[in-house]
Length: 278
Length: 243
Image (cartoon, rainbow over all chains, first blue to last red; front, side, top):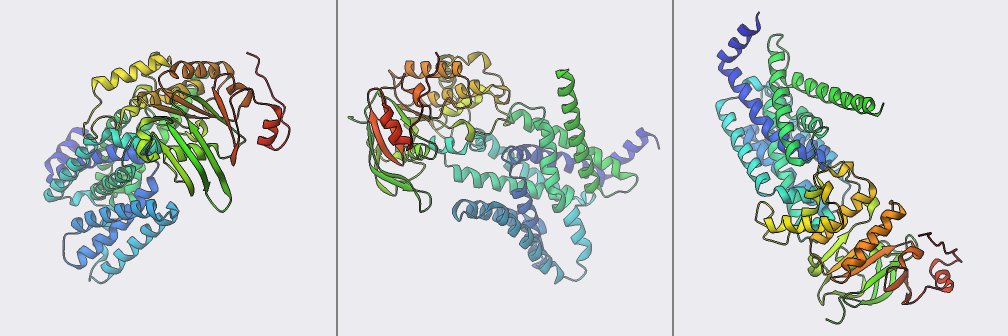
């Protein structure tokens, strides 16, 4: 099949159009919030939030409510709880994350197991199924993006200050705790956004890899965000197109591609540096 | 105001072992005070108490006549270099210095004002880093980064400037430059420098407080071998830097 025919076929299918739009919408949140996750080194905290989302989805499905609503509630709750416990009870962060990570999944599985014929849905929550994205999902994703971008626009300086130097920010009278928990809430919303594309198991990779790739080229947070959005669009769209003809799972294809791009840029950067030294 | 900092009988411990015992110290406005002492002697802890980041377990501290945490926005703080390990952070020199302007205006404005940028440029010129304003901090030398952190503290327009080991990890020449800058700024603000480098600091400061869990001395004149012995618990060879 020629490239042109392939593209024409892709754009004729409404489900492919939706899927491509979903890639772009997910990439916006992914690049913007992924940047903070990378510079603040809270990747595994984001992973904990992502996996605890299954509890919300499971309970929502059990109650015959919308799973996405359950996901949003669970993500925000675990974001606030992890942040609050971390600040006030002085637990070790890794233990806290492990607890949310595994308990969230366990609770989700318990509720889902009570529903007959659960296993089909479970796979698409865990690994995503971008071809099933509906118009309603796209509106939700647009809304999540709007909230995320607005928050970052309003509090750009405060997020920058607290990510860069918490102690100094506190001395300047910033409410460091508030901005920490607010940041975790935006991470939570981004996780829900990305679950639509790659499922909750693979969210962590999509949140981190495009931003980590961008970090190698960007000298400011704003540039890193813009670059990460661009990388993310390119990676998700290419991954989707690559997976289409051989009928590969799109989420996994996207993640392998994201990892590949990161590793290649990392090696290329090091080679360039070595070359310059010679 | 008679004293900008009043510390009365302050004690502090992180665990059972006390870090500070019964420390009393007053600092008049305009002083250039050096706090010296061995590692683990409680110097950084005393700074954190003055900044209001820690609360004393006994005794009282007043800064500008009020609670330390309420006065913290009037203090410029330059953190200890080794603890400042964010050199891979994607931020320019200018944006780092501008962080000193945060909290000065309304929290709700989205960008820095022109006046904020003017102040940032002025303090960068004062510490001679205006030419590297656009550089990412990851590309700077130790001395340059230290100046950026001093500029960030000066951008707060502080009444007190506190520096924790400002000359660790930089060479002697850069060290001298930094002290010259501080001396020059001293007519506008009280300056407190924490250091373990006894010989070097004494040439610049008005007074030295020697801290090893408790305040061993308050020398206004030359520090004698006896006080050094009291401070470190053993005779220490005084090393004079060749200037």
